[in-house]
Image (cartoon, rainbow, N blue to C red):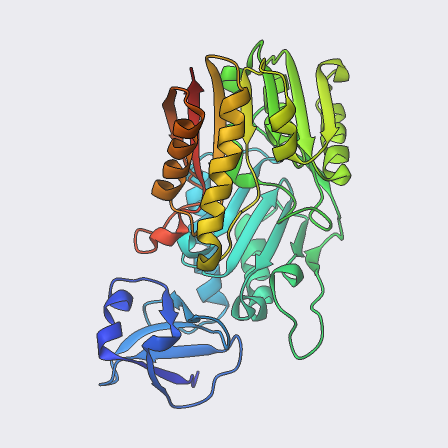
Length: 395
């Protein structure tokens, strides 16, 4: 395959030699051709030494996302090997043995596939491409998934349209890549069962990355009064109720989200007498609650998606946690999270500490939380550690 050669400036090669998968635009010394959005490109030194293969991006600060640091044919066998390696990890983690389980099969840079997410919901795999390069490879990727997962899957859905910009003036469409044209299913996470709608739901249909943190909440929830803010489809709520929580309040500004919660209650056979769905702005609601909640869950959407918004995001995390600290009962627990990639764990913890100082209450850190092992972080790409969490005891 004859690929455009991008020469990397000598002073910018070290990160590639350390296997970091992002090439910033300023690192490119010259190009021997003008690649188009999503084209494969060959990365070389000034003397012609091979550095890597990746997908070109015409806009933004990241010009190339590196898919391979070794020469490759970039054919079906290439993608088969990538997906098989990802499946092997999830199998070793014990996530693939149940036919209706929920797990992430491919996690971007963590699996050597920058720009690609694949989540599995029972018998359905949902693909989401965040780069045009991955989108153009989606049919090879789907074939690799089908081959690797053998008889487990009956459908592969592509949900890339909402994560990619318009291409050539036309809007991309989500579509099925293989199998039955299903729009939702019921799948399981530990004891909990959830209906997942990948067509209209957020992300790929469910927040897969909170599995272990929901299990930890279940450990504490028996006989407790729990407030789950930004609840979406009620993952933390269902886990708490099945663990024997006394009362659970699910708060979200979206009625559609609360309808998902109510449906998941029915699927799990839970009595609704000790559950309350509340349509409200979560921040405003926390400010007005009685101080008798044993556990408050703060799992907001990303407050910052780029560096320019980082300062405001840190202040927002501080305010949100301060409201929870003021209202939680003495000895209560706050499960607090940030999924903003540009707010690292030190900044997030600093915001939480500042909130505790402002409120004037003693706060103990019981657990420091992160994303689960099916969301691996490449040692060469620390930016992949996007989910941060703390379990705090407030005195």
